[in-house]
Length: 187
Ligand SMILES: Cc1cc2nc3c(=O)[nH]c(=O)nc-3n(C[C@H](O)[C@H](O)[C@H](O)COP(=O)(O)O)c2cc1C
Image: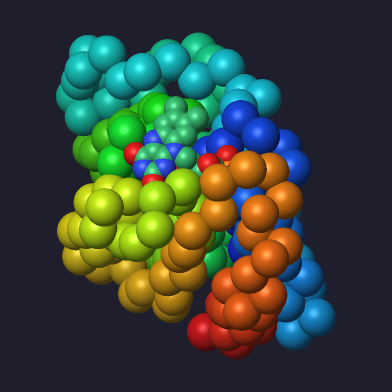
């Protein structure tokens, strides 16, 4: 069975910079024999976690009836997960954050569906560096999350790209994403 990798794309721009990095990662992973699925979170109807806590009380998972119900089994089936996001207001996009907040629904007896999976993250921002852009905040959140989930961080690719297509001027970043895909396929 090929290794299965799920990419969660957090940009509303289907052909944007973080999406281009994600597609290059997918190419690298497929070339190394993995099966890759990408999901555009923008296309899904995902409500914010409402802290009802029924997931924890009843151990049945999240009870909110929206598109997360199709995504939970995909996440459970994936052997590695990739987050791809633009930096919005100095951290992840809201599209990605909404999805991650709903992972609260694993509490109770379902952490095994998420915990321990290898993770990677791809981030693009308009500002000139990791600090002024706020990319550092997203990376700090990501590292803290992976520590909590007991998940290995396989790689982090980040860089500056503002307009759609700007990422194409950064072949090194695209190469990094490709190589990260190859690495993910082998961990
Ligand atoms: C609502 C919004 C907020 C943004 N906030 C930031 C920011 O805080 N820091 C930054 O460096 N760039 C910021 N940007 C620029 C994007 O991060 C940048 O254009 C990125 O490459 C977009 O990725 P995408 O093409 O995958 O959507 C923002 C853009 C938008 C639309």
